[in-house]
Length: 256
Image 1 (cartoon, helix red, strand yellow):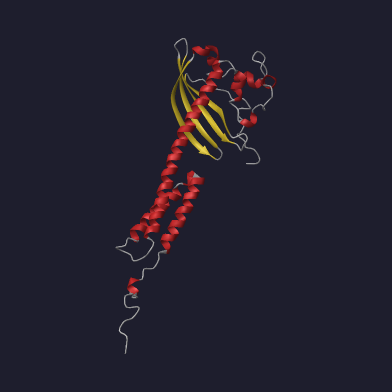
Image 2 (tube, rainbow, N blue to C red):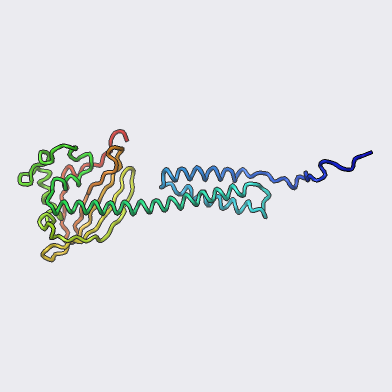
């Protein structure tokens, strides 16, 4: 007697119910993860994660269950989440870093100007040189640059520069007000900043000048090094003469 019951009776094996897997969604997830890692290592390449967020969004629209019978919708959603998270985190980190470096630049300028008011010209001159052109740790600044009364040619020229000369004369009576702080540009291993000040002299004269700073990334143990590569006097317009050491090209250690 033929058995009318079959073990496959409740199983629908029709080709219409087979949903193939979307290779494109898997590729999107892997590329989003790769772009995220690259963005974390090199934040300036954030455009990769932005592109992957757009790509993942397009795949989500294409794979919508009401339009396609392909599996992989969730993978595309995960890819979109990863991309958006990396982009948001990278932007937040860049903003935090920018504010931190600008505040560091302002602090460096204030320390520089305090040295000028204290008449510590040897230390001041050192801060206008890149790290490779400075006196080495333990080396006498007086022996290298001469005394204030009998300076060597490098220091002698620097002692005549403004606003350092006037700040040295005014001392603690000099009043300095921060006007602006600006991030100029970023290059390989170095970044530039501009910090603007208003300088009120004891006699009531008001001056305006901007300090231009360079931040150089050296390998440890030196690490980041700052120096003032230029100062522009706006009101009044007083030219500055750079010494040969100050004109030296920024150089990096051979092992970089």
